[in-house]
Length: 191
Image: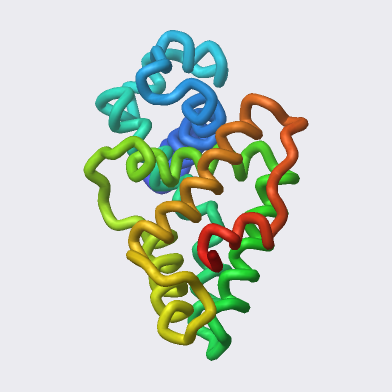
């Protein structure tokens, strides 16, 4: 019996998701410039034509991988905590605890972090980065309330994200690397 239009669309979406999911770790370890489609398809176990059925180019695939990664860094959890009426110091501790725990336990989380912040950390023009915006908001609020060091909130948020990015990248290459504690990570913001 032939497949229905809906079944074909489900198969297509499932195949596309499979390519995206399997490409995340590869791109995180090799970067955009270090990735050749021929090597990627061997590593993830799909045919080269499969990639081009869903993505016009390596750059388009990388862009989609970055979007998936941004969704998986914990934004839903962070939005929930950020919406609560808590002091900024407690919000920052929640975010720091979440990030440190996941960096320590999950190679995939390290890949998500690396790819979600890639454009910002490489000085590329990027679309809105909700994680950065949330940290900047927490920093600004904490500065007004006297919890955090004075200075440019953009730069302080960048420093915080930079440390997270650095350890995510290091953990991808050396699984034994010691991830900083939440308090060590927060020193960037607290001064």
